[in-house]
Image (cartoon, rainbow, N blue to C red; front, side):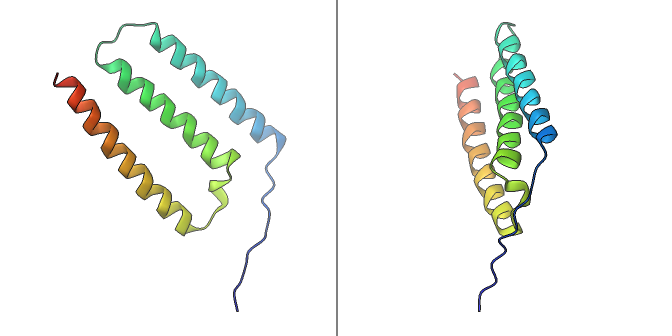
Length: 96
């Protein structure tokens, strides 16, 4: 007999507004950093800000924060794989 956890997690409007404002601020930071010449660090900072933004979307809007540990583990495997691919691409770009 399978046990399904159909419990819904209610997130307050205040949390959604806070996450939304954070996303707006991070978007502004992305635009501001794009206008500053930081050399090889521009891409790194843009990817770092994008990682924070995607984490907020995944955790709150896609409710990953309330999923069980299996989903967290699968997400970490995917995140690790993408990080390795992006890091190798970044290193290759710097070596040119």
